[in-house]
Length: 425
Ligand code: NAD
Image (cartoon, rainbow, N blue to C red; front, side, top):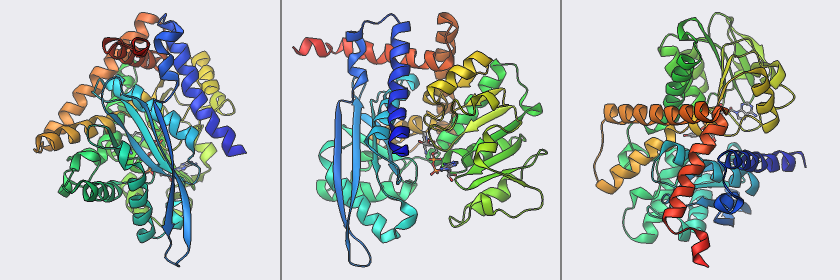
């Protein structure tokens, strides 16, 4: 039941922010009503023979939220708490992210209710292949393009591409992004979300008059996004005082040895609660979020900053690397406290932007080099930041409201130019 409540909030949060932003744009209900509902929600059963010979049935989802601006695009997550409500929220956020980035995609998301740490690699392959067969009619390079999310990676994308291609009778690399390089992935894609987060961290610090050299950073989540962002900030000489994962957090007021921590965590059996080093103090996950620092980067899961802890957050700037880490109640508290929050649908678009580059490279059968990827990523991230910042200044709204307003404007304009749902009769 606790989980149900949590998940309900994830979608509810998104819709409440959407309604608020639409009102501030002066839109009538019917002008954005379609955005309150996904265009398609698919629940699939995923029957799999386990290694011990037993049959187990997992539940999977693919939600396609909006396609006014192009094919659906969004990640696939494997998590024991994943449910339809969470996937709906994440699908809607993908529509808004692609619109903020101004790339020609709509939004979707997928998930399987599975704990990948409790299944073998062979079982995971079979789960992935069966799920792919179930969603096959609604995915494809022109239809809906999955990518990695929590607990999925390039290898999983390779299995999806292979299953899809087997059914089509020829290789279809463009059906997924975030693939390994050797089968049509893009250089720079695995690091893209984390790299994009750091671009936004620096730009927003500049905006709020903060000096990165004199600032301290705390990061919740040391996976693909948080780990990459930590690595880049560390290499730039920044002082990261706290990082956390699912098990707990570590702290050093003089700055953590991020390469040593990342090396330790590269063995998936390791976790931070067991990180044994004389130069760190252990914190709980709750303590990490309220630790003394200048920039807090939640990069793990949704609903982490809530009405319960928002008042104690000591950071001067929050940059949301994770999807939905701040509840609407926490957001209000931050606004009252004058604590700026750079929203997820702006800060973590780096992954989908480079996924777009990967898709373009697949369609054109050519490969970009790393400089082209990173420079184009930076250009798009900074343009998106400027669009949101300008909206925020023009309309006197928070960066989150502004990001939603930019996105809603673009999606509704696209819908209108295509004739709009009302013209379908
Ligand atoms: P990941 O699985 O690689 O890493 C997740 C990290 O969060 C791990 O360090 C894990 O230990 C930690 N974590 C999990 N549960 C936690 C908890 N309850 N408390 C504290 N830490 C916890 O996932 P990722 O790809 O880095 O994604 C992280 C977030 O960023 C998610 O919200 C995801 O939706 C979002 N995101 C990811 C991408 C991408 O390209 N991977 C793109 C956009 C947004």
